[in-house]
Amino acid sequence: MKKTSVYIETFGCQMNVADTERASTGLRRAGYELTGEAEEADVVLLNTCSIRARAEAKVYSRVGEVKHKGRRSGQLIGVMGCVAQLEGEAVFDHAPSVGLVAGTQATDRLPALIERARAGEKKVLDLGEREAGEIWEVSPVERHSPYVAFVPIIEGCNKFCSYCIVPFSRGRERSRPAAEVIDEVKRLKDAGFSEVHLLGQNVNSYRPRPPVGLENFDGATPFSKLLRAVAATGMERIKFTTSFPRDFHHDIVAAIDENPNLCNWVHLPAQSGNDRVLRQMRRGHKVADYLERIRTIKNARRRIALTSDMIVGFPGETAEEVMDTVSLVEQCQYDSLYIFKYSPRARTPAAAMSDTISEEEKTERFERVEEAQKRIQKTLYSSYLGEVVNVLVERRSTRSELDLMGHSTCHKIVNFRGSDALIGRTVDVRITEVKSNSLYGEAAQSLLKAFC
Ligand code: 5AD
Ligand code: SF4
Image 1: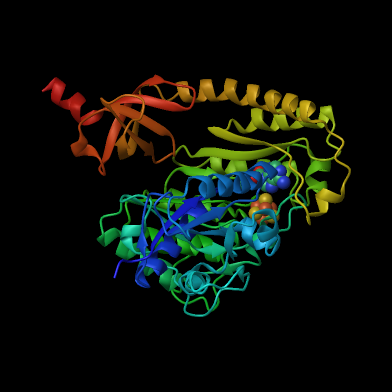
Image 2 (image 1 turned 90 degrees about the vertical axis):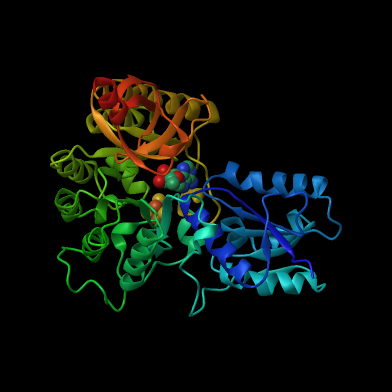
């Protein structure tokens, strides 16, 4: 009998990519076939994001497109992920062609939910919590890359920053058992993966109960113990994201100093450079606390690349307060920065504050911060000229057939000339040219050959 085919499209953050991998693992195990073609699939699942209004709007336009183009009669369209969790039943009202809504903790139950919908049940809905025995570990064939693996270590968020929907869409923090994380990384290493990304909305809050698996490792916090334990697996490159300033302990930098395979990159969102705005955002840190963390990172033995997120146009933010954000950007000298215009999210405390800042003003503020970052980034990237960075080669460049593309340990995009044989390998690359968001160089090996 022909297997039922499922197509999953992923929106949003790395956690959603990891959830799609988990869902695919469970579906294939249950006898479904995964396909890359939406039009031909029996089931189309949209794994959605709701961090800002625009991300959410995309879901409904995409449902319309899928419905219009689908060539399978009786094609089932399902919405999973953050929009599903938040909107629940209302998704069916907004988009009557949707037959299945599965929340962020229902990924493991998808096979049974799809079965119910295909058996004729209308409006199948699951917003329940994860169950014991859930799948954490992803089968290698479902990984988004054969070289880089995402390993979730903690789900959910307890911080409740006043603008953020994540604590509602992903629920309270749940840490994954340490022994399981360590075993997974060991298996990934044996399977030939060169890099892992330890994932969580706030990795610094990692607190597994019971704390089994970390007894033999030093560390001021469970997360820094976990970093040392994962480093001890011998995995070639280890990155982690996202860090939260208040919980970012200096011992994390000590762990990076001690272990060359803990990569020299930290993503530490600041969100604003003004104390009043930070208080309104309920971030639980002041600018001075943030700068203290930055000093520790900048004083590390290796040069650690630093990236951040900033929000402009938070309710009540004044034109002067934006300049404090610009000033923080200048002080921190970020390697790159994600800037967002504030987007009110229903149910969050900030949505009840009067949002008097016009779209034009938000755009202007965005551009002010962006202009500062561009200037800084240009100088910062130029400082890499002549330096050698280690690159994990992921694929051919989309811009030039002759070039390869990969990420450095400091998480920069690096392009260089080379053959397919280098894909999947780690290569030392000497930087010869600087672009606005990437570096260009030549493989140190070929440099050596040229000189021999
Ligand atoms: N509006 C704009 N940006 C937001 N972010 C989170 N919530 C909102 C919102 N309501 C940004 C934060 C966070 C990143 C993932 O998205 O900067 O760090
Ligand atoms: Fe959202 Fe704040 Fe949690 Fe980050 S720490 S996911 S911004 S609530």
